[in-house]
Amino acid sequence: MARKSPAHEIREIGVDLIRPGSQQARRHFDPGALQELAQSIRESGVVQPVVLRTRVWGYELLAGERRWRAAQLAGVHEIPAVIRDDLSDAEAFVLGLIENLQRESLSPMETAAGLKRLGELFSLTHAEIGARVGKSREYVTNYLRLLNLAPEVATLVNEGHIMLGHAKVLAGVALVEQVRWADEIIRHKLTVRELERRLAASREQKMVFRPAKPSDWQRLEQELSDHLACPVLVTADKSGKGELKVKFHSLDELDGVLARIGYVAR
Image (cartoon, rainbow, N blue to C red; front, top):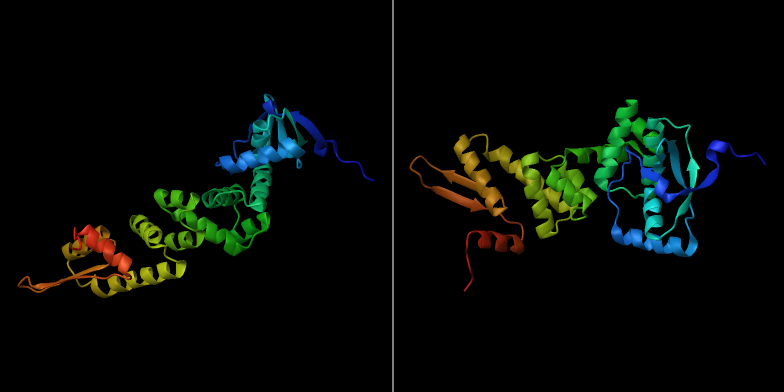
């Protein structure tokens, strides 16, 4: 049997000598999941070694931060590790990113940021990024689209209030409108299809009515739409007579409109 290279041998390393790498893609760790892993480590130990690089101050963690954190919670003093001093900074980042993607342990926004960083490091196309991490070009493109989300919406995605399918659609909406549509998704529990239909209807309405109207009418309609969280159409003739139309898609939406204008059923 061929002997392992010394650089790839598994060694026991003190957890207090290890620090997370500066380029780690993962930033959030669920406390409950960490406690579960810690209990497993108390009973069975750390099954899979972490990956480290030697540094003057100790060891830099390249992959396995969740195991390292859980080991600390479990009161373990040493964990198995593979030392990879042969890796460059860029190669170390790729190794950690691939492990996290394979384990599906990154949040959507962490995945997007990691893929973007990978592309920047090596000047890769979306297809080439996908090849590096074992994913399709479509996978990479869809995640990179999430970087177009407003910060408030990105937070909702990471916290699981908005699903990835909704987020991909919202990424194509203007930043100033994303938060309003995110609120629509959550309040009315919209499916992705329902969101797409409402967005299409909203765009069609803008195309049909907005260009022919003075900017002050357009602004009034937009402000009323934002206030009522429903499409609003205002029409008026030169004498000042006209109509105010509010479009709703469900009785729940109607209840929301009525509440916003202060109507209370008797």
